[in-house]
Amino acid sequence: MGEIKSSFKFSRKILAIVIVVLGIFAILLLYNHFIIKQILVRPPWFFEGAYAEYKGATSGTYFFTPYAVEINIRLEVMKIEGNNATVAIATRIIMHGIVDQVETYNRVLKINVNEENIPFTEGFRFVGKTYTYVPNFGIRKCLVYEAKNPPYNKVYIDEKTKWPIVFEGIVVITEDLKVKVLVEVVNTNIPELKKS
Image 1: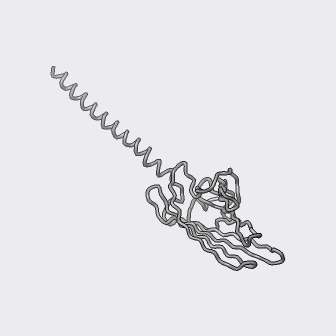
Image 2: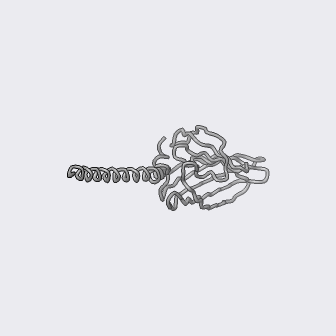
Image 3: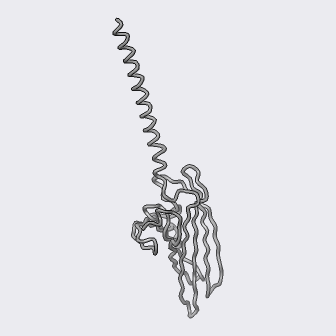
């Protein structure tokens, strides 16, 4: 009878150890699924202070009058909260020639980062993938998005980093003169974006 009691106590200890091990394993699985997955889903630009600067210019003549357009854009991640990023977008358009003026636009975007969401594409529709070359950044495979109400804009999102590398815009100089300007990334502190 003493052997039965001691083996029963031994079986209960083994059962308790198995239950504790299974509980730890279940917690690790949940942690891996919900916490680690969220961290791994985050793109390389997902940190406060991440930024990129863009420049583009074009010039020409219209009825014997020269014109020039220069566009500067800066995107910067201002705040991170969970899977949400607040991104400031500053745009400056300088026009010379037919019209001399400077236009400045500032906008704040709230972006939720998840597997299905491609940042910076709200109001745009996916039109395909392409390779594009950007000086100092190399050849990049891009997801191309077009504004739903053209002729406003196209954005080329680097497929690897999920960050814009090229904007294609239409600048209205006069009612009869609209020019296309390619605005490319020229500077960034995002390490993965720097790699070509």
